[in-house]
Image 1 (cartoon, helix red, strand yellow):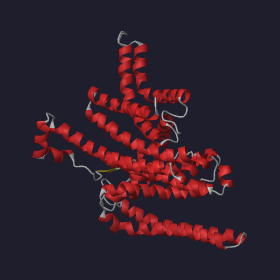
Image 2 (cartoon, rainbow, N blue to C red; image 1 turned 90 degrees about the horizontal axis):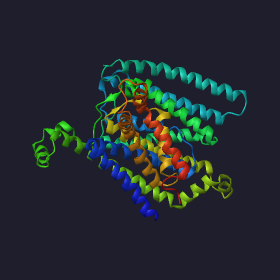
Image 3 (cartoon, rainbow, N blue to C red; image 1 turned 90 degrees about the vertical axis):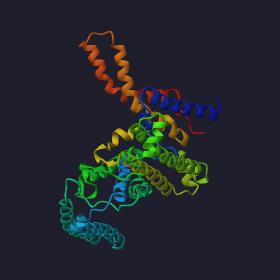
Image 4 (cartoon, rainbow, N blue to C red; image 1 turned 180 degrees about the vertical axis):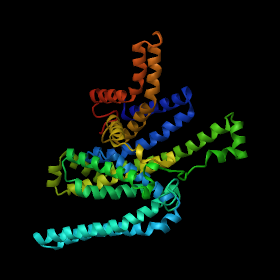
Length: 434
């Protein structure tokens, strides 16, 4: 079997799973799985750039995804005029003062001679700057969060089209990745993993607790959409006539049409990112990255700046995760910081990359679709299987109750089994790197 035939077979199986889901359950569920599968494939593509190209072990994926979701609020939501009038300027001024304090500390550290004077000067700048920052910031935050906290209590966004939030989400994640990379990429791989995980937790904690920024755990709902609302389609005579002529209920048709629009947009983004990643992989830059991954010492001896190249790929991969996060928040229609669970979903994305094929962009896309389908469908399939197995047992029998209750754990069990089988029989993934 040639590589092309094998790849067509794998993606044909994914298509068959989605079509089978639509036939056996509902097309609504099938298209929902497709949409989240597209987003998962984009996340896996970003992680594959970092790990498959450069060998960077980043487990802070959810932090960059959360920044992408934050970008959706900051770009697309309308500004809250009363909050800006009450304390918006004070908050922005405080943030500028905080940044100026950090920059001043860095400049003082570089300008002053090594010794006690540099230490005292650095401490003085940081302490004075901190108290000034807090004096301005706290009052502004209290004023902003006091404005109708049940529905707003935050500054809002810029009121721009929501599609602009997707590249902005990538830029926001890239900026955070640059700051993180400048401090953490010199660490060994295991320490880098710990550092990125900790920073992801910090980012998510900020989103949960800073209500002035994005309402914290009170969530931001009613995000603008790039697709029409279902109720508007149902009130359109033209749409109702077309749906009726096809023998589809207008309510069902409106839901399917909206999700199909999202699927089209997500597919375009995935194709663009995939083409760019493939061109990067087969370019001299991509070959250099893989050389650094395989032997950093030899690459450095050939004159390659290993740290700078690691920073490049770390920023690029994180930007892709930020774009995926903005897309996911747009699809959900709300920002819910409490749902970003670093360990759980980071594990899931890493399984996608490992199962699909680390170092192969097509494999990462395949893993995104396959693992997400399993994540959604394994639990109902497991429940059905347990019902079949226990059908001959009496109601209330302890073994029947235990097996039925265990169906809720089928997801993690299946992920573990799939990972073990792939590592045993195809350790380089279903579509391995050439």
